[in-house]
Amino acid sequence: MARNEAKKRIRSFLSKYLRDKDFEDDRDLFSSGLLNSLFAMELVLFVEEDFGIVVENEDLDLTNFCSLDAISCFIERKKGEPSIVETKDDA
Amino acid sequence: MNTEIVGVIGAGVIGGGVAQNLAQTGHQVVVVDLTEEILRCAETKIRHNVRLQRMLKKHEEEMDADAVLGRIRFTTEYALLREVDFVIENVVEKWEVKEQVYTRIDSLCPRDCVFASNTSAISITRIASLTNRAPQVIGIHFMNPVPLKNTAEVIRGQHTSLETIERTRALLERMKKKVILVNDSPGFVSNRVLMLTINEAILVVQDKVAGAEDVDLLFKSCFGHAMGPLETADLIGLDTILLTLEALCESWGEEKFGPAPLLREMVAAGLLGQKSGEGFYPY
Figure 1 (cartoon, chains in turn cyan, red):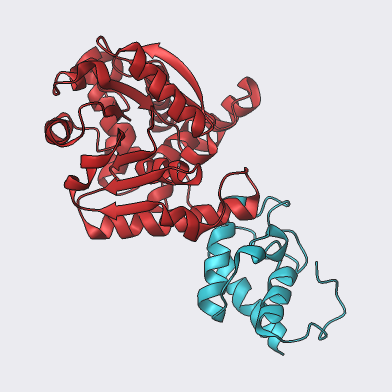
Figure 2: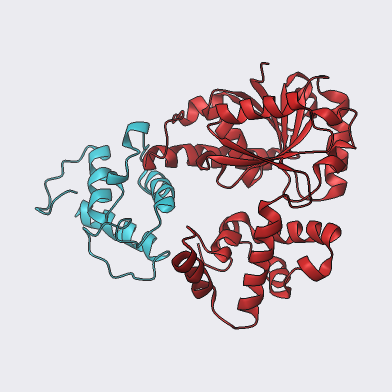
């Protein structure tokens, strides 16, 4: 499943930086204090490099990068894949 | 006075921040450093920072990275400073280096160009003595991260003219910064007090009185500081802290500002704080 595969890759990237590696897919990484908001740019660069996406100015919104669910939905949207795979809220 | 073209010498953490802040507030900027590699690195950092600011919606300045970078010229050629109205120097905190830079730019830059030294601890009057334009030499102590800080400590040297102070104030106001004007003295106000605190906090950790997190927590919880001294040290860069303490030692003596052995050890080990990925905390 594309979205699950994306989530796996993002989780593996984040695990390198997080002490608490056991977080839920919909957990807000920033407001929960797991990540400092200054880390947001690292996430953007990771998504650009690892998924071959160009994050445009209008995409530079923290809500696109605040949780595993949000990031994977954003990637799908940018790649033109419909977000219909799961029923969970897309944050 | 039109000071729209600003030369920025030194493209490290602070110099890059100054260039970004200037470009975001509509100035044309010439950034000079020694190698193309340093310049490329600064360019990338500025791009990332502008994008990050856009994401965090921190303030109202220009948020398009291409537009911001379009106003900055990165170069290894000092000759491009021939046409600037204002220079902000951010080179390493070593007297020999400052000496070379000021001698060089004094003969290059227009007569009415102001030289602002973004030094952490070296006397502005002493820097001014390297030039033939002492009334136009002033200190601006920017805080890190420059684009996000709304205040700068401005240092009046012995010979700094009122006109230079006003030109500096006008430039900083355009950069959306308030000015706190102080008189010249090694370390000025902020670093003379801050460096003592950071150095002592490092000694506390070295003596195992408390761990870094608890030291910082005490300052945050008890005194309402936004960051503790060791987090601040990591943000500034431990190498810069060491150089600043060494510069302060020259003026105030070892007894007061002698760097903590643990600080020397961490710098030697490459644990420089945020910029190297690890200092008192991992990043």
